[in-house]
Amino acid sequence: MIEVELNQEELLKEFEDKIANEVKIEPRDWMPDEYRNHLIRQISQHAHSEVIGMQPEGNWISRAPSLRSKKILLAKIQDEGGHGLYLYGAAETLGVSRDQFINWLHEGKAKYASVFNYPSLNWADVGAIGWLVDGAAITNQVSLQRTSYGPYARAMVRICKEESFHQRQGYEIMWKMMEGTEDQKRMAQDALNRWWWPALMMFGPHDSESPNTGNAVKWKIKRESNDRLREKFINKTIPQAELIGLKIPDPNLKQIGEEQYAHGDIDWKEFWDVINGNGPCNQQRLEHHIQAHQDGAWVRECANAYHTKSK
Ligand SMILES: [Fe+2]
Ligand SMILES: [Fe+2]
Image (cartoon, rainbow, N blue to C red; front, side, top):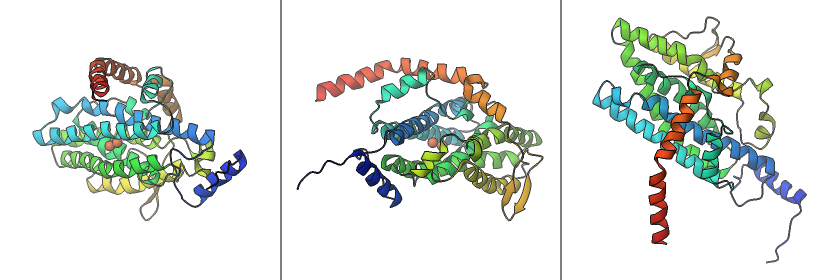
């Protein structure tokens, strides 16, 4: 077979044809620099979110109200660590090492989902996080199963299976509390009041103000817009709240169709404040990650020594 060198234009055409025909882009395929850079940023940000997201819930493992709930929470948090691993693995196929991703996080150059910069104050928060934060994450991740980059899409298929269990474990906690004492009901409502808006913010700015949407949509990295995903999440979550007697903390919420709602204004100033490092727990989350990474240095050394010896 005669190898023909393609020029940039032909390579781009071949790439765009694959995208148009829903053929996945794989690590060894040619891809435009902007496509690669967008994915490096998005997948590593996603991986960091999974791992930093272990902290607010990890805070409650030792205080879970029963052995059953402790086992479930432990399994859920362990899953999140696994999600981080699949995603770092997918991101590494783009030519950046995991050490580099971690350094960028520790230097404050990489972001993670800002929702994890809010504190988990009591057990009801563990319920609200699973129900709302994992519920919002799964809405986004179901759509990402069809993303155009193969390793990312495949990681999402596996992650989604586990996320639906996470969403249910959170909802079960809220359900139980709403069947409990008046104090427990108040706690559940209070947790919903505090987590509802940060969960809606997880989908990012409105489509009209989302700077990265253009190429990401064109190249099918992103399959649905921020506002469309937010709407889907709201439409499925409101009936769940009503079923157990919880009230959505939005005085301007309006039903506009069967299982279709329009929400009130989101406080974007708060969103940008938290993204820019001024949320209630930004510093604590990062410091904890750096400390855990340093404490784990000996594990990496042992693994490397074993790896070198066994070669
Ligand atoms: Fe996850
Ligand atoms: Fe999860």
